[in-house]
Every structure is written in C-alpha cells, then in structure tokens.
Picture 1 (tube, rainbow, N blue to C red):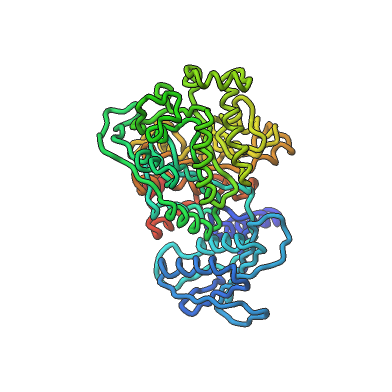
Picture 2 (cartoon, helix red, strand yellow; picture 1 turned 120 degrees about the vertical axis):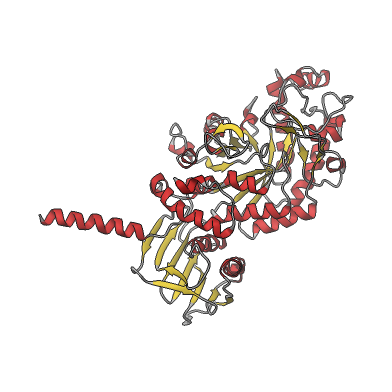
Length: 535
C-alpha cells in the first residue's frame, strides 16, 4: 500500500509541476520552477542593468516591448560587480563554457532577474524567452513566475524565407516579418528578391531591372492555371537604402539576411528589361503574369560571356549591400529545352567539352561560384545545382524531398533541409481553407514532426546538415494579413524543430503550450486562423 501511495503521490507531483511550467515556444532545453508561487514583478521602477555595452540592443528591445504592450517605462544602466539593487533585470556576460553561441541561462527570483550568456545573441534569445513569461493580457501587476532556464539551439541554421517577387511586401512588413523570426529564435532570413514575376532590388548600374523588370501588366486570377487575368499593372522594388535599412534592422535582432538572385532560370523579369541576355535575344520578353514552371516560356539566360559579365556586375552590387557570407543564386527549375534549341548554347557546350545540358547547368553554376568565392562569399542553391556535378564550395537547399540534401551531405557539402512536403508554408493548413492557397496540404503536425537529419546518414555525414528552413511562396499571398495567416502557428512548430532538443519534442505538449501562444498573438495583433482555438 505504501508503494502504491508513493507512486500516486509521485505521479500527482510530476503532473502538477508540469502543469505549472510556463508555456514557452520553442521548448527550452531545461526549465525548472524555482519556488512554487514565487514571482518577480516588473513595474515602472524596474531597472535593466547591462554588464556590456553590446547588450544595449537587447535591453532596448526589452524596453520597447514593455512600453508598447504593457505601458511600462523601464530604464537601462551599467551593471557593477556585486550590484545590490533590487527590482532589476540583469544582462551579464559570462565566460564561454560551450561552443554553442546561442546558449543562455535565465534565472527569475522574487527580487531580481538574471540573464547570463557568453555571446550577444545568447542574451537576445534569453530576452525572447523572458517576453514569453509575461502575461498574455495587458494590465498590472506584471508578474513573472520564478523559474530557472538553461537553453541553447539544436541547429546553427534556423531559417525562414519570404518570396517578394510574386507579390511585393513593403519595408514595414518585412521588418515585422523579421520580428516574427526573432520571437521564435530564428537566425536566417532568406529574402527571395527576384523571379519571373518581378525584380525587387535596385541595381544602379542596370536601372532597367527596376524600371521595367519590377512591373508586370497583369496577374492571373484563381488557382493556376487561372480563371482569367486582372489586367492591372503590379509591382514595386526596394531601393538600396531600404535594403540597408532592412539589413540593419535584422542585424539588431541577430538575424542574417541572405539575398536570392535567381539564375540561370526564373529570369523573365530580367529578360524583359535586357533581352540580349536570353537565348532568343530578338524576342519580346515580358514580366510573367502567371504562376508555374515555365517549360513553355523561355526564362533562361544564355550562358555567354556577356551574360556572365552582366551577372557579375549585378552580384557585385548585391554583395556590396549585404554583409552576409552567403548569396543564394537559385539554380532551380530551368528547362534545358531552351539551351538545346540555342545554337550559341550548343557552341558553348562544344567549346567547353560539355556532354549535355545538365553539364551546361553545372558549368553555369561553377562560373558564378568562382566569381562569388573571389569576393569572399559562398553560394547557396536549390538542389538542382547538383545536376551535372556540384560546385566545389556550394551549400545545397534540398526542396524536392531529401534526396538532394542526402547526396550533398555524402559529398561533404553543407545542407539546409527545406522539403516541400514539410516546409512550404504556402500550402494549405486545412483540407478546406478559408481562402485561396496552393493546392497542397501541410498541417501543423507535419511541420512539427519533421526531422531534418535523415536516418540514412552516418554520424559523420549528419554533421553536414546545417539546419532547416520554412518557405513562404507568395503566389496566393497578396497581403500582410494573409502572410501572417499562412505563417502562424506553423512558424511555432518550425522553431521547435530547429531550436529544441529532439528529446524534448512532444506534439501534445506543444499544442497545450500553443493555446497560450495564440493568446499572446492576440496581444501582439498577429493574424492567425481561429480554427486553432477550437482544437
């Protein structure tokens, strides 16, 4: 009987303590209650103390959030050794004891909150966790439960993509999007700036890219292949000053911005402005008005010297703008038929001893990689860059399932897993959607249960899985509200895939924590499907 009572008591204690744990997404590595019922209260007298001026960014982020959503006015001051002040939030740099740059410790007691980390980003991630300890409704008192958290990310690359070519999003929303990534401890923003449907970045040496390539004369209506065309001129682009503004905003949130400049295909917007770089230079190209892969429309660059010179000039301006070590060059969905039909392309193949058009694709990517490497940068490409042989230093984004990523990892190339069946957030969340979406289904559970490291890889090969990324393609996403609807709460699931330790993942527990997160989205005025409230 004693054994039975002991077992029952242990079960109740475990489940009671689990119920008391704060709802944090992504799930921390370690989370403990310091003292049941104990709490720290933030008020207008709370001081944010920093031991390093580099922490000013994180302190400012915290102060801005407290003021905007709770009306709390806090103050920042330098942190002195043996500081005795009460009612403080302390951001303290500690000696590094780990190779993981995102690690932090957060300790909430009734008189003080202490955040320890050896890196700037570790402090910032701790602030993100602290914000999730705040009440989900406005009003005082602003009580935070007394907890101890030790946390660190699983993957070094934690990414999210935004396509601004099919539909354009202004700087204000791009900044908001970056804030969403920061909330979820993601650290890479993949900015898909060019495609057949619009060129979105100012290139001063080639102004027609935005004068002509940034605008299309109509957009199909309905699900591809469409029920018509609205006939409306549509477009927009970012000036170089706006690009710098976005990069600075992201850097303040410890997010790296990776630009994507598509080649050798998905280039109709370029060819509309500069047809001389296509395989049919006498043709009148137009910025694309329909979606899909353009096997029937010539959107491929001619791999001639003048084309490479043009692309090098474009990439030079892009690389001068973006401090990122990485430049995404696309490399996907290029129909080889246009090279097959081009006498110039065939001559280039002959001169370079290339046996087929796949080898020509590889030749193209190699040429671009060599140039990018000469500027101290590394290329990233979709898994089609494996066709004909992978460029020596390239990083592969595996989107057509995991096959390309597995092949690249076995060749000792870094890989970002982003398979369409688990990471494409433009696909429907529900079997019957509230509005028009891509005609594929990606429920929340599929995102959450995705494992980026394929079981087929050896322990050594698995080291080349850099991380994973969610993608938001915008064919059917024409407004910020729709983008948020498609993003949330699948972004929460993605964050747990990328940040949380694999042993900590539990979909049932995640869904419970998500209930609190959705209330927080109401506070932050983030749009999401109300269906999740009834689940």
